[in-house]
Length: 148
Image 1 (cartoon, helix red, strand yellow):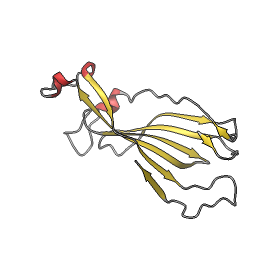
Image 2: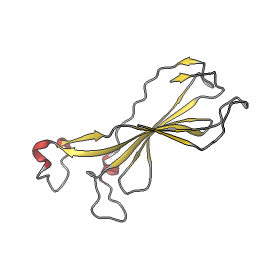
Image 3: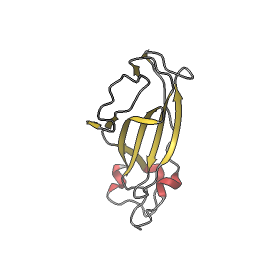
């Protein structure tokens, strides 16, 4: 994390899973990053680890479809917040696949010993938010920038 100027509050990072068709989010982990409170200017390195989603979340069926399940595409994102406002989100599509030998004829019930997780390329969205300094330019607040 490269902090351009000292900040008065800590930042919050969240890891969130969105099961296929559920329309709801499951927060997997959340951490505060800072000098408690505040962040000093400069480069800050930290580790952010999260447990995977619970199998019950993976196996849940969508309310509007009996077809959905653990092998459908889901979403995963890491969100960065400052002052309660999200300023960056890195999102991935997530799918679960069987090992190559079971791809053509998968078992009727999921055999988790032969399933692996595949993430898409990351999608980064930046949001303009007000920071600490009142003279900082926040013109176009709410504008988004998509990067690939």
